[in-house]
Image 1 (tube, rainbow, N blue to C red):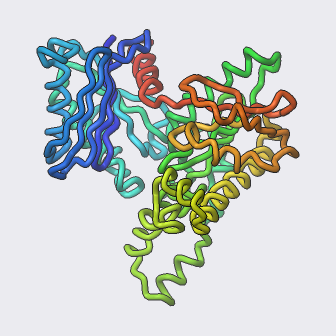
Image 2 (cartoon, rainbow, N blue to C red):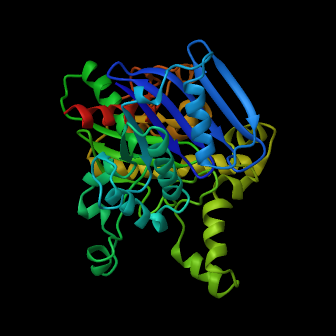
Image 3 (cartoon, helix red, strand yellow):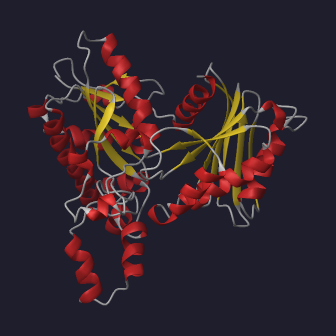
Length: 399
């Protein structure tokens, strides 16, 4: 079965064509800066690597360009869109309506639309990708995989806020959680790895997804039981431009005493805070480079970032009543040995002991970076949300 995976962002489209059940990536690529004259397109197969800068006005034109490349006489990998049996779409917010992967219907699209306010940067773009793909790949099944679905197992004691009860029962205000496809993918790989190296059948894992967006999940026996992101993807860890946890009183002070509008505060917390607000840079590579040169703001930001992660490791170890492994994943988690070192320093009480030499090794495979004496495994597992989406689509359509 050939499945196209589409991850449609506000100004980007990530895509892969995957042959299932072999998990064979036939081609992959990305279009970013959609809407500008300088959009970037990449298209990669076993035999071809194309990169192009061109104007792509909207998602429709972008997906049409992708389909044209897939069927191109010279670099294409299919003869017709009829070869595509399914299109899997990443949808960020499924609310309480979706706890599983679903075939997309008009009712499903209506519910995705109703959740625009909860994920204003993501759900509208996700729905646009669905609408365009329905026209281009018109003989394929369209399937939605929700970031929030994996976290539907979080118990009420953890997902309910201490607000008036009707806000949960009537307005569905609760912890939803995000990055679910990533946390699910790496946790399943971690559980498989632990079973190969231990006789213990149960598992207590903390997965740490660190990219421009960041989150952590407490996972017991394969199920999410707590998560750092909540009603929307803004709280918890310090992120590229998002503040993470902040005292609610600060918001009222900004509005009532300093004269900020609610819209300005929302923009500040979502787009002007986090590592950007602390350093002037949102890319961790720039922050680490400047910290090495003696930039005190950058060093403090890195320390704050690691400190916040440490606090959640302690909290989730208590919730899990033990810890078998912590898992670093996503762009920063997989590539920043310095952040991993900061997080794991002075954590021997939790049985976390980092091997500095192993920590510096780069690999696309699962790797263990703890010392032999460490009671807790420290794993680096590259995430692959597209493969996880393909697996869920294939399972839905073949069972």
